[in-house]
Length: 604
Image (cartoon, rainbow, N blue to C red):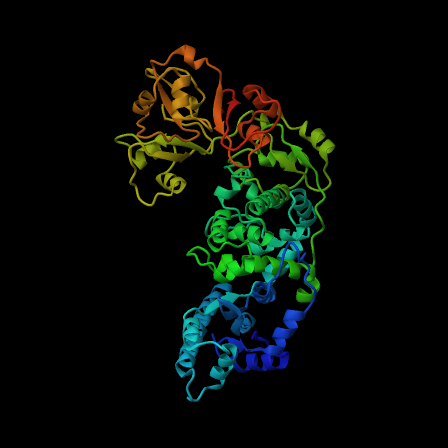
């Protein structure tokens, strides 16, 4: 039996009765009337043949609709194993009305929820103890007995140990609906292009409430909450550009990921669940149970990693689809943003962000709003807008006006190479953090932050990222700008080489006519790990002939990469890649090794 909120008069009376007690939440009990009205209200805006809603999922959907449309000042206490069992809704609105600051409100909510959770667990334990006996039940125990109609004493006792709280997100969700209207027409088109039901674009509302700058504690980022590891399969993610924060480019990645999941798993419910749980995890569930039935998998599959979030994810997406279809019904009048109407252009050079905004005649904040993939390092001027970046123009500008305005940009504000955000220093015997910081003109604390160090312990052979500050470094500093520009100049019996993306010790040794062991000895390297940007000493025995060999790096194709993406990453062209590798078209495959033509290494 599902319990709905009682009529407003009773709720208000209960709230007023207890809201005068500081930190005491008002408890809104549930009734059968609310359950029936919630369950039958409105037609589902989903295609049943592609997105089925079996009974178990339907109950979950109603629960999540409640969460999405309930104020952040209310907390649901419920059974995570059975969405029918919502025990109470705690109302903390009186704290905000009393004028408490946000920090105090959050503390009161946390402590109030914990107190009520423990109290309810105690009530359930007492109910389990009295179950099947003639002992007198309190009114609350009688209400909860009806919730657990047909359940055994053991089932009630188990439920007491798993009382869970779920806070409403109504305000965030409503704002997400307003913001999403700017992007959903284009996003739906991307989903259709990849053969994904366009309704599934509402998955973004579940992941982030369409917060463009959303970050999770696990490292997921953007509207679509991609982790770096998954995002890099489809998106550009580096120090200058993080396409996870561009809702349109990340939407294309989300559609491709969902499509890949569907092709692996065979149904959209499983593909959606795999967005949260991972495609291999869902493949294991299918194999273990021998079924693709989402309801049976949700009911029977058990795994340490298949927890509450994964088990509810498909239902959350369906709930978001329903709320999105009738936003006024749940939130009243909203103020949606107008659909996106803008053009994109390729930036021809490395350009300072503020110079680009100035020449286009827009405020830097406006240019940043339309190009959220540009990182804070670019916006603050530590890095340039990359050459080849697909710039989204603010409204009022088009490709022709961009060309005219860009032509006015002075030559001294256009660059052939990116700034260096970091140098890489490999620790040698006798090095200290203080000595390294002084050598590079930075501070010990800056080096700690750049490398996630807590103390001062460093190890011989360890590669440290050194913040460059984009200023010349002392001559003789390993990785300094004077050294970094020199590819083959002799310094103390050695030449130097800056490691480029895709380089390996074997390839560098072959190119310079030396051995991997000689490179290791010259640079204090124990294994084979080197980092892009690191400055390596090349033993003097290496031959000039070897250094004149064709200049290219080897790149192993990652899943989801295209020739265009690879060319943009290395600052070359698709045609150059095709010629270097004898390709007749643009088809490449994951794991393929490509020669990437490069020129001189970029200078600082």
